[in-house]
Length: 446
Image (tube, rainbow, N blue to C red):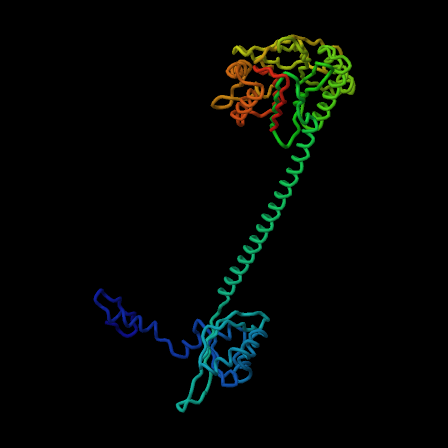
């Protein structure tokens, strides 16, 4: 028990009465104290809005003195301009109609000129006869909520701006892609036209011979350097050539054009294969090497002359080009070697090798550029197709006509896929086994 003037003894485990008394002492707040120090603002106004009572909490929030507020100003005088307008147009009419409103967002003015975001709830107190007497209003500080809402709004605006910027960037990227595709297509079309201008539109018809050709372009975005031609010299004689210039693009195209027209002009002046290549060598060396920009090509040039019993004689010379492949009707295939021939245009006086052969009915002469022999094969594309493989493939098609051989080789090129990364030209000249007097030329273009 407690003695007068002494501290109360601690309550034992079973002393619930002492514990209840201690809690009761802590909760002995008067109604006035609860009103004044509540964690929210309270005020009561007359029906015209004059403030009749206001608690300390709200006064402290607004930095006001009670004497300057009670009976002197109205509730709307505490509101910002926007809050006052909303109160007059929405809040007050709804309150009169409904008798109460809850959780309305407003802004109040503080004495320092600041703004306090609040949530306001009001109800009208009526007399026993139902007459409205006063308005009781509760005010909650919504500063943190306003800050949170403003942060959410800011983040949303930033997200919207980022989305708009992303959409704009995507639209610009799509526009740039479409423009690039259009430019690429225009470039490809222009290059295709230019590429075709460097090759004959079609091969002429040769008496007693079948001709076929195929040209593979490695990339539609760049000009190839392979070339070929077949043209008439004089009574009974025809000239042909096939080659490859160094480089790609416009400079290679210029070199190709010069090479083709020089070979044609030289062949008509003197069709001897070695003499023709010497003339081309001089032209290229003087045009490029003298200016400090040496350029060259590989080329094989030949002349077809009629023989007897359906045979034809072929004389040719090579300047650094892979040898022609002769495919016989009996199933044999071998290269017509021209050893010692140098690249055309490198030296002022380059030696060139010549060779000759006779084609009988069923025989075919195949000329090609190194795109086919240097195609990469194997499981990992690390092996070159090579000369031996080409010879074996051609021997396996010994019974084929010139056009059938080119068709088979076209399928072979397609089978290389990504392993074929260089331009490739193929030209076949063959005597049909039936040896008619005149056969139409076959011209295969990609």
